[in-house]
Amino acid sequence: MGTTGAVETHPGKSLASGCDFRALADEAWAMMEELFPICRSITGDGVRRTLALIGARIPLQVTEVPSGTQVFDWEVPLEWNVREAWIADDEGRRIVDLHDHTLHLMSYSVPVDTTLTLEELRPHLHSLPEHPDWIPYRTSYYREDWGFCLPDRTLQSLRPGRYRVRIDSTLEPGSLTYGECYLPGAVSDEFLIFTHVCHPSLCNDNLTGIALATLLAARLREVDRRLSYRFVFAPGTIGSITWLARNEGEVHRIRHGLVLGLLGDRGPLTYKRSRRGNAPIDRIAGVVLPAIDASARLIDFSPYGYDERQLCSPGFDLPIGRLTRTPNNEYPQYHTSADDFSLIDRGALAQSLEACMVLLSAAERNATYVNLNPKCEPRLGKRGLFRPVGGAHPGEFEHALLWVLSLSDGHHDLVSIAERSRLRFDVLADAANALHEVGLLRPAAAPAGERNPT
Image (cartoon, rainbow, N blue to C red; front, side):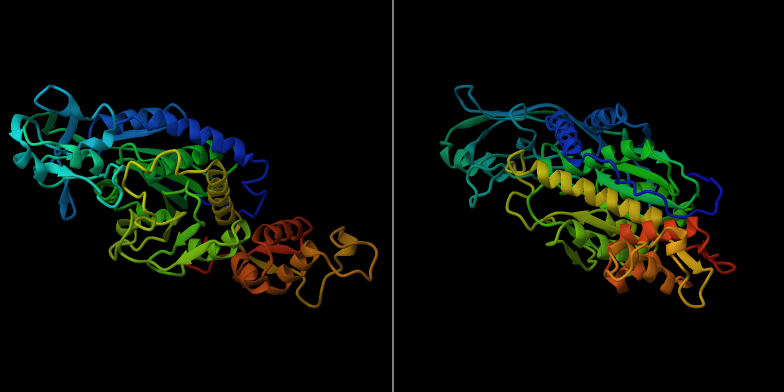
């Protein structure tokens, strides 16, 4: 992890300034179309191909962790790869074929080459009777098994007879693969962005997370950064466990974090708080997301979900939340073939990108100040900060100036001022920047032995 030295900083321009989020959403869509056909799992060449496409857009360090490596209570599994998988009837017609859809094969299926009766085959077939035209997503990561997934309408049409089953796969010592993009900033304090790369052809879960994280990293490379940023693209659960095991001594630098996924559907933005419940990123989300989406939801932490379960586990308890739209298991298309491009919306992608950028920007700009002229209000007009003609009600920016001056006592950060004033965070940050530039504020020094909370 990075080790750049700390410097005194103050808020500058928002990272979101000048972003064309609709154009970025189009770019994300195109990237997702490239990623969609790849057969991914928690290990194997599908993950490597996915990371190669990410690495063509941003600098990416790829790490291979050998099978059998102990990672806390787990160990890195055998590597799985598959070349073909199909079922054919007694006339040679393929009724299920991996080449038609990557969900057709249960992930981590062991090699099979046999002929079975329909009765023998049925226990290995998975469908969704309540959605007869959808293919379910099923896995068998830690138990050797095999299976196929197919529409229930197809399953019900099968007639008694003998069926040829072929799965040309390998399950053997190899490695687990993850990628990292590290962008050093003016300080070594880090913002971690984590997204899972293990799911096969599912758009919302999680091609949206992969594409948006990639575009965020690309954007951050182009701007000055106070914080350092680390983007981790890894398989779900075992990937975050492995990453934490390899970086246990370094995670103390993490000041903020987001787990990204499910960011393209038409549901409202949903932020899941960290295990702490009051981490800086939790408070930031509370003040900035409602300004982007009036229907935005903030929900409490639970130990079920994505990789926030590992990052926020008691032994780490990192200040990391999760951003989705509709959460996992709360929309019917979840983990089915209906999670395709018809489920996602370019406008929702654009709004999700904006939300991510605003969250990162607020973390960049949040600070605690000391008012250098605390005895009564300073004359803002003579400093060019207040309108020259009096009598009119102050505007939003002028209100922000007064609130920042009033609460800049070395104890209130800009987020707490936003919470109390109900003013937009970026307006308050702009006001603080203006007051700093005319010498009315200085950044508060962290008490001895403590770090700035941002």
